[in-house]
Each structure stands twice: as structure tokens, then as C-alpha cells.
Image (cartoon, rainbow, N blue to C red):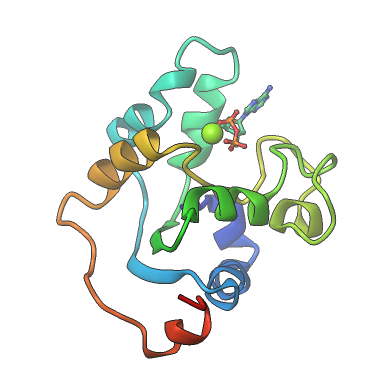
Length: 144
Ligand code: DAT
Ligand code: MG
């Protein structure tokens, strides 16, 4: 997942990370950077033919983002549920976009949408790999 430049500018990094932590996901990678044009284009390659693509690349490369790798059972689905619909005006209250967003492009956070895209995006943003660690409190997150 990635907090986009609007989320960083609005001071929502802690709020967003806190929601995933409290849900019970385990943080296995975290870094901040101003994305290069190359990494942004590779990340959004599936959208390269769309009319909004140039604006999206300009936005994502406009300032710092926070890249996060999270681990958990069905983590992708769980995270997408917490994130909410793409357009903040349509997103359900209680989701990140539903609570903080009013826009389609400025929607604060990216989340991988499938295991294959997660694998691709993790390789792109975390070429050094992610952390292996176990959380002592996880035994109280999952019954078995
Ligand atoms: P999501 O971020 O919910 O996975 P997506 O993968 O369809 O959404 O699109 C990637 C990003 O591109 C999205 O977060 C915001 C932007 N975007 C999508 N559709 C758009 C549109 N019609 N106009 C402007 N920006 C758009
Ligand atoms: Mg997407």
C-alpha cells in the first residue's frame, strides 16, 4: 500500500498506518520517498492508455509518498475494504476514503488489488525485500 502525496501533505500518514495496525495487519515494510517518473509509470502501467494517466503520474511524483508492506490473512481484500471506493464521494463512511476523501484522483492511498499485482508492486517498491518477524500479540488476533 502507499499513502499518496495528498495523504502525506494532509498529515494523514499516522492515521492511515494506525488503521491497518489496529485492524491486526502486521507491518513488514515501510519507507518514504519522492517517486521517480520511472517507478510511477511502472506502477500505473495498467492505466497507461487512460486519459487521466499523465495527471496521475504528475500527482504521484509531486512529493513524498509512504510505501508500506503489510502481512495478514487475506490482507489484500481486508486492506481494500478498509480503503474504500476509488472516489471519496462514493466511499462508505468508516473507510479511509469515505472518512477523509472528496475526490477521485486525490484519494490518499493506493492498495494492491490482487495477489499478482501485490507481488509486482512489492518487487517494484521494495526490491530489497520485506521483513520477516512475528508479532507477539497476533495470537490474540487470530484464534488459530
Ligand atoms: P484504485 O486506486 O481504487 O485501485 P484504480 O486502480 O482504478 O483505482 O485507479 C488508480 C488511480 O487512478 C485511482 O486511485 C485514481 C486514479 N483514477 C482512476 N480513475 C480515474 C478517473 N476516471 N479520473 C481521474 N483519476 C482516476
Ligand atoms: Mg488500483
